[in-house]
Image (cartoon, rainbow, N blue to C red):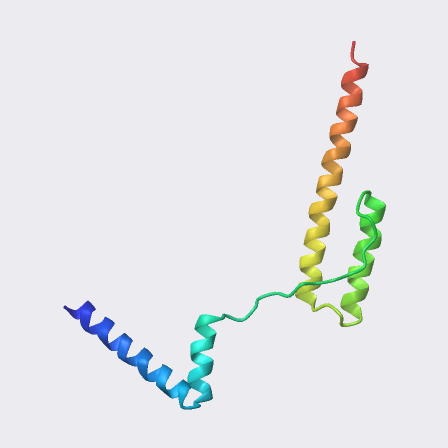
Length: 110
């Protein structure tokens, strides 16, 4: 019973907020839109990075990310996120290199 009353009250409150928003109440509209379209937590970042095939490439790319942050083109959290992506690429390169080295060693084993 109590749940039904609470649900009915919630519907009434929602209808009142929608009515206020339709009347031009910007706070009511903001409240509705914040629930319908939550704020974007991130944005696309476009940087001109070199090829990311070697550790040397990654060093240059990280330098560009740092420079973009220093110039204010990237927020610190965006630069940190880009650094994390570059770190994943470094691990992938390292894993591929290690796999190739192990394969070459196994080929030499009699």
